[in-house]
Image (cartoon, rainbow, N blue to C red):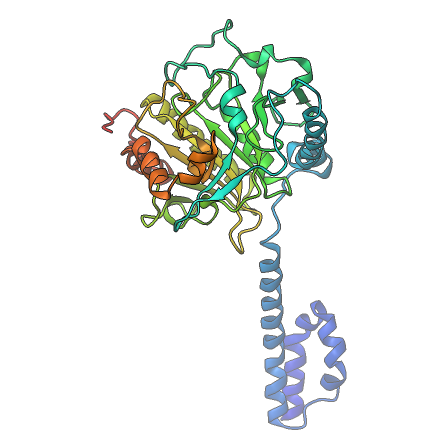
Length: 415
């Protein structure tokens, strides 16, 4: 009886052991000896199932480990010539050149202090204030940009007119990316304050283009420096020059925006600042392991949202930062702040609100104001310019992500 069962076992599991030779080698002697009793036969019969289950679990463990690695669909050669592969090189070169230019007499409007006076404003949210009186006194006078659909005015200052020495570098060798000039900000807020200017010769007005947005997000996702942040001010939201540009700045401080609680809105990656937070805005998270298709979809949604805000005369600010929350390393967060109040002129003597202030970094013109500014005053100012605009943005981005047929594009907007 046992001999017949031995023969049946060998016949049924011969294929298994042929394709799992490591098992056959390990248990071969045991199998060849046959089975002396029914118990050993039952154990052997279950053996392949146990091995298969173990292999399946091992495979799943391997897959979980690999999830933290960013997917790369392009070849190595293409990667090395793309912005993904060259972003860190550009950043390193920019820092070296910026330091050199900062020492050139008269090139910058003023020299940044190495250890400026600063203060963490007392309160629950920890806004950071820093003294920068030179920027208030010596910067170029901000332009008046009449609307969110402005025309380019060649007679006004634009980045075609900067001195050649102010151009840190021109990025024209990154496969798949637009030509971008990195230009010093002559009136810097922080060290390494640089303007990201896409396709300068095409005279884009200060309205976001999809290519510019894609460049900035790709750049931020592929640098190894959490202290570098990016920002954008639209017309009516503290933009100074009507020529397309983003800001790249060194902000090593832990800011309010870095730890602000988020509530999910849609898609598992679109959030709003929590209802417990004192300010309002949305946040789109680009995960470290997002595929190229997922990144493109999120960029499309951000771009369409920006166009919707322009159409509805809703000034806005963007803040891009690597995720500094525990366990979120490798992600990039893009915050969008809409406002109901259109700022035509900057009042250089007062507390203005642009992307820096909305993120929790507040440059101030005089020491007395810095020492006396309270968290309540900061929040009141931000809420005043924000108004009810964010509520319409929550509805719009939710409709876009959830694929509803009728967006709010053509619906009357009440703010």
